[in-house]
Picture (cartoon, rainbow, N blue to C red):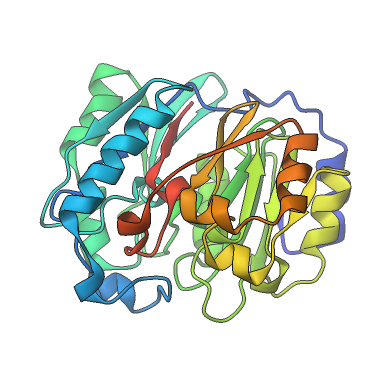
Length: 307
C-alpha cells in the first residue's frame, strides 16, 4: 500500500506485527567532509544552510571524526573519504540506503534533485564496496527522472516495514513509489511538507520502531500526528519550533536504547522531552556538530544505515 489516505494507512499499519525485520541497523557508514563548503545548488531549497563564510572545513573534519568515534560505541561504523567535487556529500543518507527484501540485501541509490549531488550518486567506491565486497544487489534509482532522496525524504519504521514520505522538490509521488518498491515496504504514507521544508527527516524520527519524535508545524496534514499516536501509543514526542530548528528532529537510534543527536539539538530539548524519551527507554547522547550543521543537515543526515 502506498497512499495519501491517512486513515487507511493507519488502519493497515496498525494491523501489522513488528516482524518485518530488525528495528535498528547492523552497522553504518559515513562520508568525510573533505572540501566541505557551501553548495549553491543545494542551498536553493535548503533554508537550514548557512552562508558561505560560516563554513569551516577543519572544524567539520574534527567534528566528523568525533562523531565516528561516538557512534562506533553502538555499532561498527566505516567512513569513506570525501571529494572536493561534491562539497556537501557529508550527508550520504540522502543518496545511499540499504534494505533486505525477500532475503536479498540491497544497496539503493537515490535520484538527487541537484546536479552537484547527482555526481555523488555515481561514486564507484561506495557502490563497489556494497556490490562486490558485501554482495548487495544494486537498485539504482539515480537515472530515472523523479527525485527521491531516500531516507532524507522517507522515514522508515524497519520493524513494521512502513514509511512516512514527505513530498517536496526533493521527492515527488512517482519518486516515493519507486522508493516504496525498492525498500520493499508494506505501506507508505505520502504527505506534503510545509512550505520551506525540504526533507522529512528534519521533522520526524522513528526511533527503533517503538517511538517517534515529530515537529507538527513542518507538516501540512494535521492527520500525521494522530496517525503516529495511534501507531506509537504514549511514545510520540512533539517538538517545538525551537527544538526542531536546533535539529532535534534529525535524530537516530542505532541500537534500541540510545538516541543520538547533535549537542545543539540536545541542549535545546525541554526537560519534558528528555523525560518522555527516557520513559520510552532511550538515553539521549550527543556530540557537537556546529560546523557540519552549517551544511543544512545534522547527525541523522550524516549516517547511512546498513541493514
